Image 1: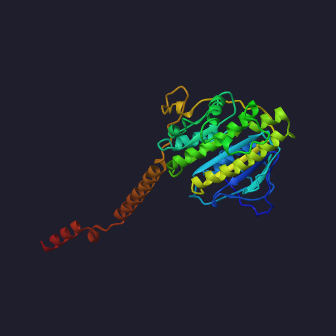
Image 2 (image 1 turned 180 degrees about the vertical axis):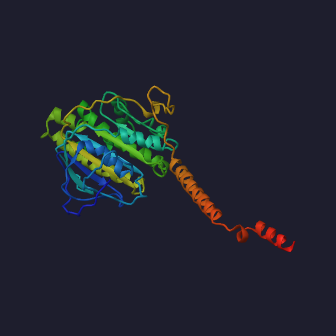
Image 3 (image 1 turned 90 degrees about the vertical axis):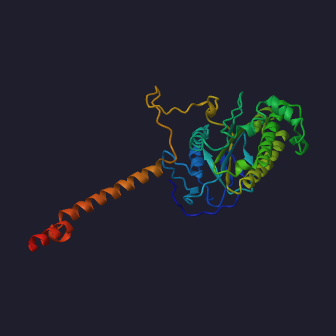
Length: 350
């Protein structure tokens, strides 16, 4: 549940320190400009609310204002950039300070999308900088199956046609250093995602919402290796700010200006993120109440419609029975019944 708060205007700035920056948002998703901090653990609920999903607890944060009930964005793209003090994201809708930067995932939102739109083709894509890059895809996995996953695959991609190395001003960055390649590989992945969406535009035009959660750690590695005051780090931060700005504009346009693009910048997470790599395609839909896990039946979208039809039909029948019983109880057989009326006339004639 969202609350309306008075609008406070602040000049647009880039992402400074730990922050949440809204790069793009449709008109019906109203982010208010203000210096309201948001906790890292609230980010998944914020994404769920922007997509029109319900959350377990009331989120009384003034940065997001309640919008139209029947308008839902087609996609939500969350970009998490680690190891950043500041990014020059001047072309943004709003920016908020991030407090308590604990690790978070959009697994709950992804599971909601996958369960509600399982029969459609939602894109549920998550990327994490771990030993095994994590991708959780719905039925649209055939489109992204050729997307480079490991560092070796992306290295090969950087040497192919259409590589970002031919268009980026590398300056002090090297094509041979391990940390530099990690950063460039993440830029390449962003470029390839937009290229695939441009090639398969039907994914952005269907009625099922899409979820993208991309975590970028290239800047963190550059800061650890060269230092935050190095030329490599400054050049990479400038490149990433430009790339993120263009990525947000491209995705926003591909989804018909009906997408929310957020950037979370953190210097470091307060605790390591521990997660189990798996695909939601591997999870079985169990709807047997006698199962050992005591899982409920799978939710059916027609449940609310059927419930209302049965409810109001029973109410109408109950009212009809009450009305009929009342009229029968107060009926005069001599005047209100044709059977008794003819019987009385025949008796009188005899």
